Image 1 (tube, helix red, strand yellow):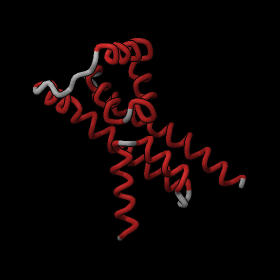
Image 2 (cartoon, rainbow, N blue to C red):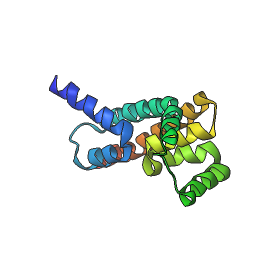
Image 3 (tube, helix red, strand yellow):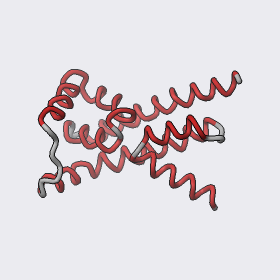
Image 4 (spheres, helix red, strand yellow):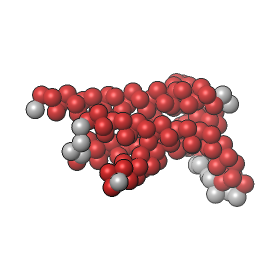
Length: 143
């Protein structure tokens, strides 16, 4: 039961702080790399789905009470990413740079088709997970 609870906690943390869990697992985990990859992918996927569907509601709530203020300079940067690279650029940057909550909320605000947003975000989470933990797997294989 303790292992199940630990895994559930890591999944929940990775749904919000994806890069933090990846760094922790890559540097300190003694589990098999594929197990770590699955935990991080499931957590990232959970975060993408939750924040994409509830992101619009969350942003409307914060906007109502003026709690969600983005400085013009930062908003201009996100809009330039959206215009230059589209949703694919936002999805690519979401797991490692923007963070899953912010990236999913931004993508859902820019695109009304939630299925497309989720598909692109999940693809990005899968690619980053496979890439980073695949490197760890190769290193473990060679050592």
